[in-house]
Structure formats: C-alpha cells, structure tokens
Image 1: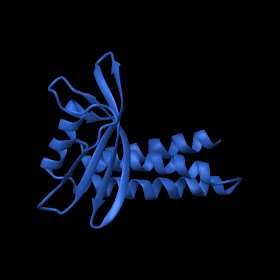
Image 2: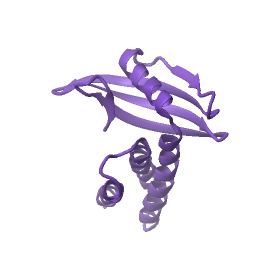
Image 3: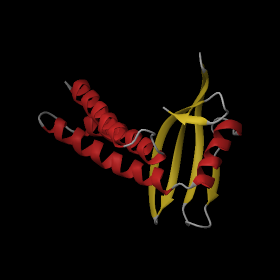
Image 4: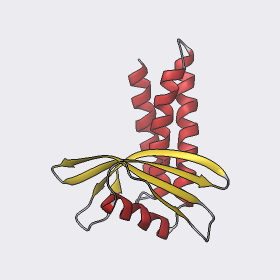
Amino acid sequence: MKRKILSAAAILSLLVIGGCTSEPTKQDAGMVIGGILGGVLGSQVGHGKGTTAAIIVGTMLGAGIGGSVGKSMDDTDRLKVNYALETVRTGVPSRWKNPDSGNAYSIVPTKTYETTSGPCREYTIDAIVGGKTENIYGTACRQADGSWKTR
C-alpha cells in the first residue's frame, strides 16, 4: 500500500510539473527530487492510517524545499555543479558562495556508475539559501554534449 501511494505521489508530481512547461527547469527538477524524497521520508514516519497523510505532507514539503534550491541557482552555480560532476572524485566536496545572491553550495558526488548511455553520478547538495540550510539528493547523467542532466 505504501509503495502504491508513494508511486502515485511521484507520478502526480511529475505530471503536474511536466504540464507547466515544455522544457523542465532546475526548479522543476528540484521539486521532483525533493517531492520524492519527502514522500519516502513521510512513508517512514507515518504509521497506520497516518501513513498516507505523512507521505502527502512529506511530498509537499520536499517539493517546496527542492524547488527553492533549484530556483535560487543561477547559471554560474549550475556551471559549478556541472564542473563538480565532471571532475571531482567521489566523496570529495566542492564548495562555493555566489557573491551576487549570497547563497552558498556544497556538492558531493556520492556514487559513480556506468550506464549504456554513459556515466551517471549520485550526489548531495547542501545549500544555504536565504539563510536557511537545505539538502538535496539526486542523480545526474552525462549527456552527449558534455552537460549533466538530472534524472
């Protein structure tokens, strides 16, 4: 039952976000990743009939936090994420502070693996946006043009 609810929440998040624009943004990706992780956390916290409510609340909170991190990143920040995914060894943090926004980021590639289409990396981003600390977990794969696309 938990898996069905979690799967439905994840699919609903993707459909809602996918219907908003034809080209997904970093904010959209952050919302999806945050929503899925929030739903997973909610499924672990809730018990009995409260599980459904915990999954829904976790999904909504996670989507909000993930979306704010994605929206706050400017082009320079995204380039630094791409650079870290391309060049930084697994387990080594790459940190920077954006002088224009005042936001600070730390990305750590946590796992690297090969797929049929090329390398993929799991990562964590710890961000300080507007004085609040936020954590994002995700997976990105290298595209043919050398950029990294969030899964």
